Image (cartoon, rainbow, N blue to C red; front, side, top):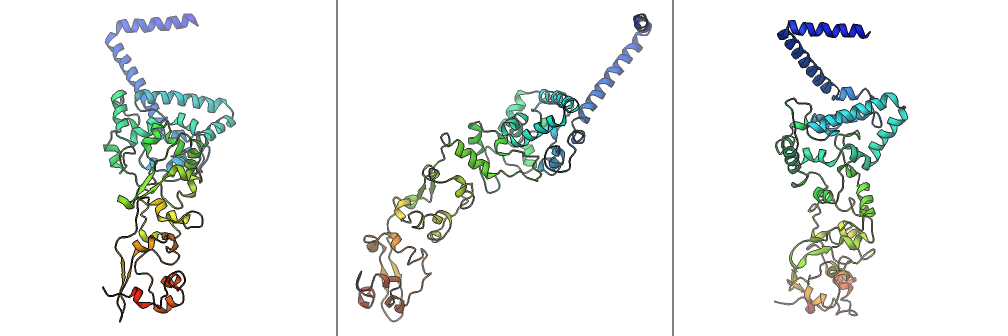
Length: 393
């Protein structure tokens, strides 16, 4: 055997000596062929169709990762497996390919239970999922600052396009798909989680967006139970800011700290309030209705006193004028009445907080309704004392 090998080697040497130019050409062709085959092999084994050999199921769950990816917006944007399961840059791509060889070896040599356990961890354990898809991968496409920083620090290409991610340049890429910069721009939808604040607190993208491309839906929606669970678990670390509603002296201040000491997050979100600043437009005539704050602040669960929320509010300075037919108008003074009574003694038991919605008749007052509830000759002068209210200006 060794003699045979030695003989072959000697023949090759002799051929090179006799045909040096041809030998160089042959070596060059072999190298080019090897590089071509290697690149094509990398391309072929990076496609979802190749991944489907190990993830063949056509349903959500373990082994259905290619199927669920096809249902997701990432597939529509042609963002494929290696775009997310490999760090940006050429080195990140090659590390992902080497990791893929390890996974392939485990798939062949280890029992199916091993892969099932790994896939279940990837879909249920956010810490393990963050190992598979670190923040930098998501932020590379969804922000400008991370994209530009990573592109300036890493070798993105060696002249061959291996995957879409390494050619992504922001803001051009995200704008081409109508995507906002998640750190600097307003988000569509009912929730604005303040991504920057979460990232500054070392929260991983997949802590909230677990299964972002493999849940079986087109767009991944955050399960708000996860928000509540995390906020409750990290209550000592999280300081939600107070919210100022309105402006000027009539503004109301809402304290997250006081309310979360008594209630869980999901008792208000999203039942009463969207998780996005400015989406709850509380009008004056919402007071006293079973909505927004007034689901609790109804004098049954919690107080409905104006000055409990509006710390600097005073009574309306302009009186209300009730025009009548055949008699002098009635001038109602809020300033005078709030010096005697609390707002909630009239609002909204007797009066809705909207001008003109109740039409009084004198018969109603005589029956103890509206003003007649107090103006009965016992609490205040009787409604029959016409000149007490109907005064000429």
